Amino acid sequence: DIQMTQSPSSLSASVGDRVTITCRASQSISSYLNWYQQKPGKAPKLLIYAASSLQSGVPSRFSGSGSGTDFTLTISSLQPEDFATYYCQQSYSTPCFGPGTKVDIK
Amino acid sequence: QLQLQESGPGLVKPSETLSLTCTVSGGSISSSSYYWGWIRQPPGKGLEWIGSIYYSGSTYYNPSLKSRVTISVDTSKNQFSLKLSSVTAADTAVYYCARLWIYTMRENWFDPWGQGTLVTVSS
Figure 1: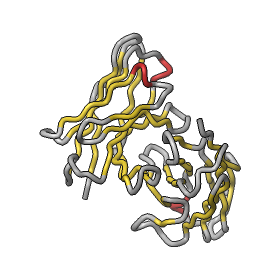
Figure 2: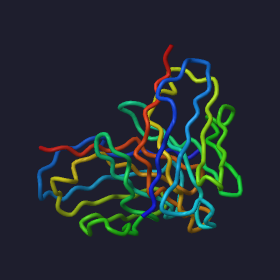
Figure 3: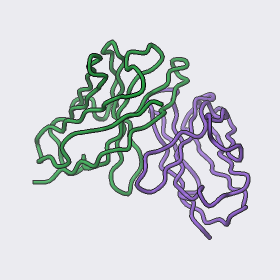
Figure 4: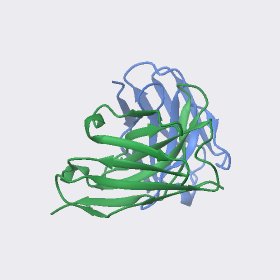
């Protein structure tokens, strides 16, 4: 089974900060990696698919990169509505989510 | 705009079977481009994929839950359903249904999601 890890597990940041979240797979998954945002009490929302493709309607301050085993989600300038938990998910094999990274206000 | 809505009992007794239905509106469940999936999230924890189904009835399940899970589809009602047997307190979670976009066999993603429904396992 492919295991997913994320770092950090949580971070504190200020509005306007550049934020980077890392996701690592236990084996190569090519570019089959998706990113979701989840706010408290809400369903996850797709941000990025296939490692770097921005889902329609998602602000351009979100970007994804990486391939193989190492991936990053970057928020170029953190906005108040971006405080949430972010999950990566591999689709190379049986769907599996990372443990999440919580982004809160500094 | 496609919408998904979960429904079913919010309380299930231990050892019994959890049953949920996802109703799809704003689009057809019979599209060849999608699978349909169930994902759950225990309170305060991460996301766990349960299984997915194609409109033809083809299914695939999380190996860790496979022995207890059945997912079915009713195209006439534009619904798909989840049954999880022999539940314990560890099955207490918010259960989400979602559309699984299939671009290729490996290139796929969940979007959109239903709002989720909390199922508590307790006597």
